Amino acid sequence: MKTVLQLNTSIQSGNGESSRLAHEFVEQLDADEVIVRDLAKNPVPHLTAERFGAFLSKAETRTPEQAAVLRYSDLLIHELQRADTIVLGLPMYNFGVPSMLKAWFDHVARAGVTFRYTEKGPVGLLTGKKVYVFATRGGYYEGTPRDTQTAYVRDFLAFLGITDVEFVYAEGLAIGEAVKAASLAKAREQLQQLVPAYA
Ligand SMILES: Cc1cc2nc3c(=O)[nH]c(=O)nc-3n(C[C@H](O)[C@H](O)[C@H](O)COP(=O)(O)O)c2cc1C
Figure (cartoon, rainbow, N blue to C red):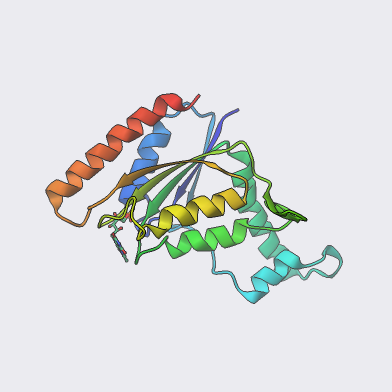
């Protein structure tokens, strides 16, 4: 059973350029099950002391509110655990990842569930997964120190045990219509080349 988790993180929901590329890719994969989590339609709340407290709470003393927070985090994690392939639409907003993606990260990083601490440091518990990232930007960052997104997303996923991560970039989308069209066309070419690798 092959399961794909498509994560749309554009504020434009399915109409974002990153969501479109992610969708076009997923459509061509021969998956048995596709889970679409759209963070614009269903935003993940910001992590607060109360919500983090729920993650740490003991079953014996857990309040109904804490139990609800845990159930919600468990649901997001279950989607991630279930998927062998994760397809992430990743816009750049104000030099970083969408805050909605950060909120999702904050709800799926759970000690003892998706990673654990050992004497040698943290170990990720989500292994054997492949991630495809469709990164869309108004300007140009790929391969420069200003591309903080790539390193950050790679580091976070590696922390959970996911190290097989492929990026496709569509950059210069704010430069002008011709540049945008050419950039999206190039990203779509790369996208097509990745489809056969999905076995
Ligand atoms: C609020 C906002 C902030 C943005 N900040 C940046 C930025 O810092 N750097 C950049 O290159 N493009 C920036 N852009 C342009 C987006 O990266 C670009 O429009 C991209 O297509 C967004 O992906 P989406 O269409 O999937 O939402 C920004 C766009 C918005 C709406």
